[in-house]
Length: 101
Image (cartoon, rainbow, N blue to C red; front, side, top):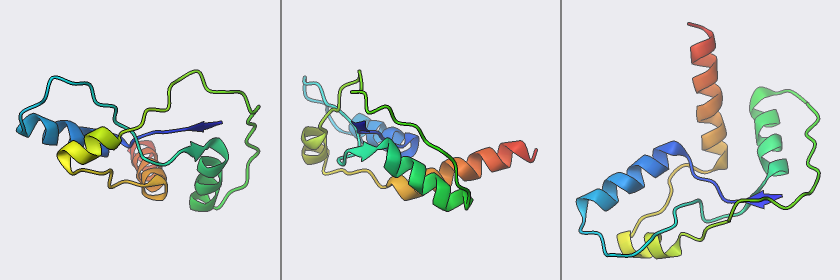
């Protein structure tokens, strides 16, 4: 299964940038430009946690769209700054922090 995602930090940054400029009366999609597989995410998490686990992907097609964000990128001269590796790292840090409180 392949899908496009976007880290919440990038989503907030894009919304803020769009709010600072006059919006055209059009719809924009917003997602990471690269399709990412569940396997890629699993491997990144395993690397970051130094743990092995079984990840089962039944290969079913996703029911959500894979939006293309080129129009937003070009109009606002913007691109996501959080890639898969950094996004996984931030999520792990977040959960470790809240579990140690």
